[in-house]
Image (cartoon, rainbow, N blue to C red):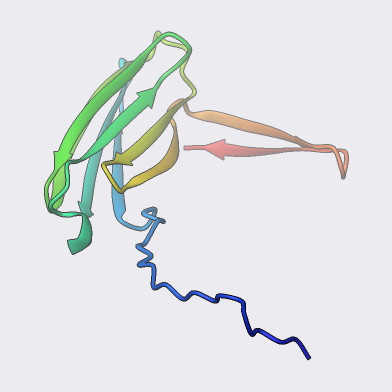
Length: 140
């Protein structure tokens, strides 16, 4: 049995706030397809917990189309956010999908979510080396 005489044991209560904000950012993407290209509209909603409402928080949306083209928009959040943003992807661009990053940041908040939206219609081929099979799925 260990004797704790002469040793100092401290207990301190440390408040722990929610660090995972992935369920706080709701995104509803709407894609309108045409011969000229795809029109992408993002409807974004979020509500911050009371702990973070008095702080300077922002949501940055970065939509990357390819290596050289991207769309960036920053929204300031006080308590909640209910916004829409859109962009057009011409059919002349070689963009089979758009990668979107949502970065929620502030003094005590730092979270990132990612979303990938397929743009071009066609067949998506994937090779599975463990089975040696090529699987194709139709993209509407």
